[in-house]
Length: 140
Image 1 (cartoon, one colour):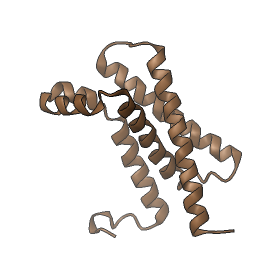
Image 2 (cartoon, rainbow, N blue to C red):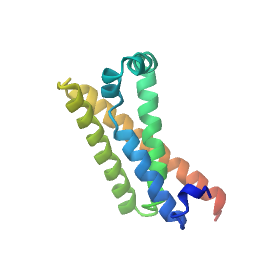
Image 3 (spheres, one colour):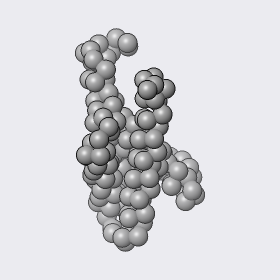
Image 4 (cartoon, one colour):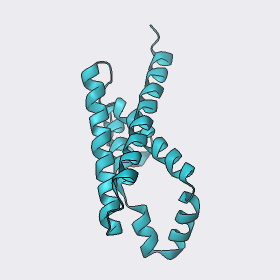
């Protein structure tokens, strides 16, 4: 264990720590930072301009979040799965809201709803990955 994380003594504490770090990083308005720092903005715009990259990264970001949350909210019952997906939806709504606030405009319902749909699809993939890893480590 890295010395800087000595205070995270249990696996659950480490899972919660990385889930919180990932969520905060996910919520950070990168496009807003790109407007404040033009060099970063050019790189950001170049990388994220193609729609397929935007879709892929949204799905990947929320797949990882779902995988991390599965270590905290064990998705073994339908109720826990719904709670986990509710957390994902809440983070997705916060993410979209922060993007709208920092952009200073409301681009429309379509793009936000599409992003939330991709977020939930990514979350489903994260849950699938969690089940595959759990089955590998704990067969039966």
